[in-house]
Image (cartoon, rainbow over all chains, first blue to last red; front, side, top):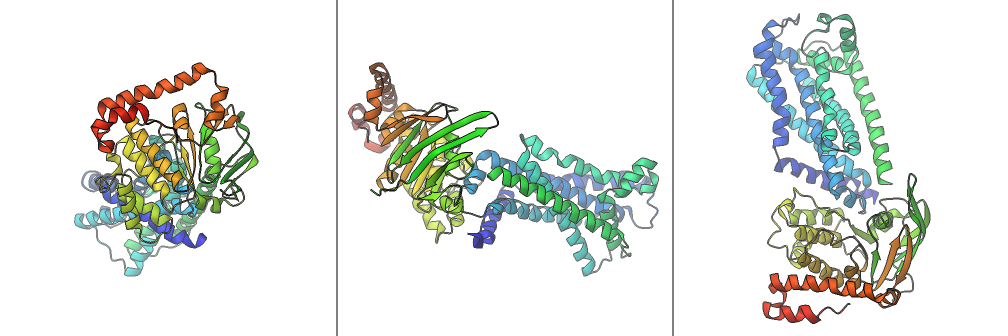
Length: 254
Length: 270
């Protein structure tokens, strides 16, 4: 039976990808907020923000926008998982001779695909708005890898929300703090401009290290030790969220 | 008939916190028969069904399906039994055909497409096959749900309240399906709160009440236990249904002219 894990996961991933194809509004609503924020910050607020770097403000804030895109995108993962649970199809899968973890992995892989599409759309809009980077192909790969890790970490948090939610609102509501987190980080303004305790929080929360790393790669500057802080946060969140999600899933299906 | 029962339940207990839902349930279901588990809401029918389909673990006792222990060999049990739950577990976004193909692929069968087409035809869903399941009526959803359960021809089918919420015509369609299954050799365990459903379908009926089986026998055996007034109530209930069916007509099946006669006399149990 275990030899079917990959095949079963593939079939189930195809199913939930089809859900996205049938309702592309989930992608559109995911990208609309980040794009609106980008327009707002670049054309309305950006002129008054001093970042202390010579780069264009759009280049400065794009990494944070990409994280917001992923944070709002994973809400749909929790939503889809919740609907599966409530509708009974989850139980149908669990009562069939298929690998049990396949059901969760299918949602995770779908989340990854959907969020990468959303991120690509947002980067496309940013390029139209004048975003420029000298990043090498290797740099782009590094940014892609960090965004994939970020998506996986947040997706497993979404799985926890989807498995434990009692209502549809509960399933997607967990993402609001995640969307808000980049605002209290170095994503839009330098942390030095914030009052002491806020600056301390901003400098020591995961988003700042991730944003700083991506920004440095885009600007072709040395990433320094920030990348290790970022990776430690990402891997740490991923491992904890994965372990909790699997434990909840196991308790639920046995 | 084999001497080994298709389903064997012995001393199964299950509690949710302080609530003792099952307090020692025993029964056997012989292969190729229809066994009805009758009980009111909250009697523990669904809990028992979930234990038999490995979705829930019993606190005590044993249960086997086709000789496989539900706790010890859940993977083998899942290959032997197919569950149709209380709420039609279909994917609303996918079409009827895609739902069937999905299950066929998950059961690792060759040629999922033709399996799906054959089932669509068998369940009178061929025309609706390309439509999203969300557009289906209650009866169509239930038929699709049962069709999905039949893929891979599992020897045991568990139907949890298969006709709850269906209109009388859809109900009769489901009954016909269940009879055809048993005739084909499939073992059927069905739970119901409708007395007439058990009466018309089941070879054996067990009554689950407050967590235990209080009676278990054939319809004839159970009838002798009931006071005459109760029996009359059971007999009257279907006649209104048949008046309804005669009025709205199930012409598609038998032709309108025959409907009145068939409805009056054709209700031979089994």
